[in-house]
Every structure is written in C-alpha cells, then in structure tokens.
Length: 357
Image (cartoon, rainbow, N blue to C red; front, side, top):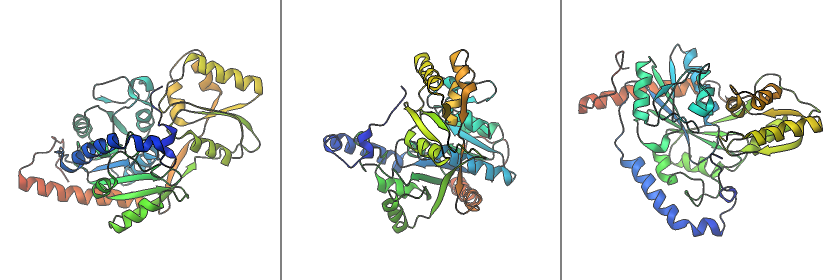
C-alpha cells in the first residue's frame, strides 16, 4: 500500500488529533516557514500551480487537465510538472504514455501525458528546466504548492466541498499541509468542487483575504449510463467514496465495493479476488482512470482485469466556462511582471529556448 489517510482526519477532531497537536504544531511551523521564506527558482515561462490545502484527493489532476485544454485552445504548448508519486523512477523523465508504465512514472503522470507534454522529477527545478527545453510555454504543476521550489505565477487551490479541511488539524494530527493563514497568503485563488458545504468556512476566509474563488464539479465523460446495472466497483484513490457516489449517480447498483490505498498497485491475490467475485455474482466491474492505468501494460490476470473493466472517466467542469482561460491570462501577466522584477534585481531564470514573455 502506498498511502492511505487515517479515517480520523476526516471526522471531527478527537483525542488522537489533540494528542498529536505538538507534532502538528512543529510540522506547521516548518512548512509555514518554508512557504514564506524559501528561495524559489525563476522560470522564464508562466507557472500555474494546481494544489490543495490538504493531503489527499480534491480534484487536482482533472483541474490541471482542464486548464491544459484551455491553454491548447489558445495556441499554447502547456507542459505538466509532476513528482511522479507512486512511480519508481527517480530521474527527470519525459513521460511517454505508449512506453512507460505507472509502476515507473506514477499513475497521474500517465494520465496527464495523454493530454500534453509531461515531465516527472523529484527535483522540481530540474523538471521545469526540462519542460522549457522541450518547448513548453506554460508550466502546470500538478501539486507542489507547499514545496516552495519554483516561483509560481498563479496558485489555484482546489478544495472538495464534501470533505473540506477534514478535522482542520495539521499533519500528522489531520490532513492540513501547512498553516491555513500562510496557505491563503500564498494562494491566488480557490476552486470549490461540488455542491457540499464543508468548504464554506475556508471560502469565507478567502473572501475576507480578497482571494477570488471559482466553482466547478466533476462530471462523467460521455454517455456512461449504468441504469439498473449491478456492479463491482473498485478504487485505489484518496477518496474512494467519491468514486462510489459517482458510480451510483449513473444509476448503477453497487453490490460490491472495494477500496484500496491511494496509488496502490494491486497484488495478484487482490486482482484474482475482484475477477472471481465479479464472475461469481454476475457483476460488471467498474473503476477509475487512475486504477486502469496502473493495471495497463501488464500480463496475466492484470490484463484480464483491464479487459473486463469499464472505466468511469470524469472531467472538471468550471461553472464559468471562461475561468480556465482567465486563469491562464492572469498567469501570463503575472509572469511578465515577475520577470521584470527579477531582471531589475539581476535574478537569472532557468535557460529558455525562446525569449521570455
């Protein structure tokens, strides 16, 4: 298992969260200081960071994809920058979706690479330099908001309206990655996903800090109706319950639901259990895009599971359909202003193939 957030993180703070408060305080001080004072490398192209306040899934990857599609519609060449979490490669690599497997580069980079140029790197400065060398004129960071490695021109923080900030405590007592005040100061805007109210408090805080916010929802791609279909649904993502709700929203009856750790690669025994259960009960197997790419490219039972699984693909749809284009435009303006300040101060950027904006 790669990672799985403790369930108590997403409930009202209990004795475990309070017991861990000293460690949360220390973690928060370090994370907050790094965000506020770390020296960030300059990039000669606009950098949009799609991040979130908390550990776990809020919809960053589909948000990044939506922004990349808007960038391509404007005639730009966007490039995704990812750490390649869950993959084994520790060298800066351009992801080839026809060659690489998730076990090497991670599941999210494989999905991103189907949309645009994607580079994985444990060292974000090196990764950004590789994207610039490959001709990217817009960098979209999938996560990395709290890392403070690169100068960011537009930081969009995604928050799930059902989960919100969980118990509100900082790691390890809760899911929050750094002090909320520092995160808000470093953010450009918020994106509230879904129609729940768990994010309302942070949205009000953002409004008081004069931070704009957008709204969006995850929508199933295509005509993926499952009305009256009995299914076995499995998911190894940060919030499997969200996927199960999506499946039920398509009219399916989930007879068996199987949750695995985020980014987890299934064992032969787990794959066999899914196949056997579905065959015995006469169930259609449904899963997420991330789980599907983790299984793809393998042989034996994994290949059989790929063949028998239906993928429920989702897109992040902004309520204001012009919002992604607006975010890109503001990032470009911010990049120009940043580069002028840096040139006056004698700050050198990562070498570019073309003149900076």
